[in-house]
Image 1 (cartoon, rainbow, N blue to C red):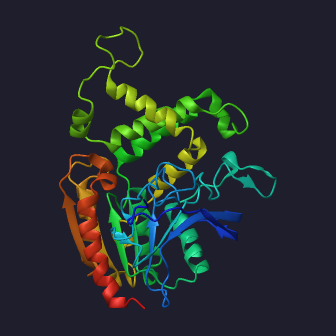
Image 2: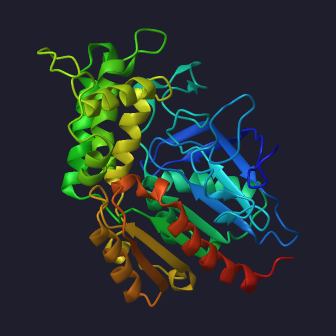
Image 3: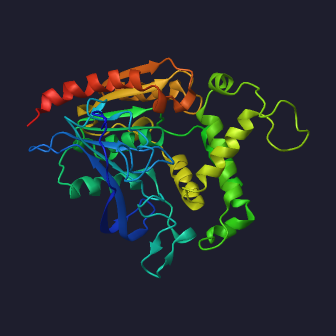
Length: 373
């Protein structure tokens, strides 16, 4: 029996834009965007919501691809009766520029030489990602988004929308994010990048059609997973449990947590591109909309709902509080909620009940204001 709260089977769609001028001054030609949509756009085109994915996410946010066993990465939040209710809203999610799940990135074919870009791909920013998303919403005929929402790097894109195109959004929902990376956050990313570049198979980025830098990319992902969880969630999930009853007295994984990290690393390398990892982490490190960078004309017309999680030690609650203080300087309409959770940064993918209550209430008020025509 079909689940009434499921979107059901969905397909990824693609659109190609002739060019995209980047913050660096470089230009990309024939830029492909992979995206999915859920729900229906109303007659006035006033019910569209853009979902921005986190670092290693993709356009497949909800529903099931044909033959797949697992749904999209935020399926618990998008669908009939859910936080982003597809009975009311037209929900869009696209793979970011620089990604490796359909949108143009380092693993894509460079139309100028018909070879993969690799390190010929230009450096990108969060702003470049958002400009490309704006092209997509223009293509879909949407003049103004009801909301833009996302967690982690997705939250950065939400904030960038408020800076770059404040007149094009009615509301913003940045979750578990920051206006700029701290030195510690930059350090985490640099260690991950060095792990990839130290892999002999990385070959200065020229590994396509050859041996992939799986060891370096796996270590980078393991590093990331440590920051996504909290001390308590690791204790609750693994403690010091052994994979077998006794120590092996070898460098094989003895503890359950070691096995978990190794598994996550081995699975990740099958779906993500090492060069995309390098480019996207650099884009996150460059991101900075703090202080006067945020205070733009029309920003005060945006309604903000900012959510953080108490145990998140990757994007700490104080960084969300800094967003609120900055918004207060421009008299923005903003609500800030810190959710008590022990799941660390991953909480934005886990604490569905609390997030749903907050987002559902926030969006319903906006929906009434713009009408449901």
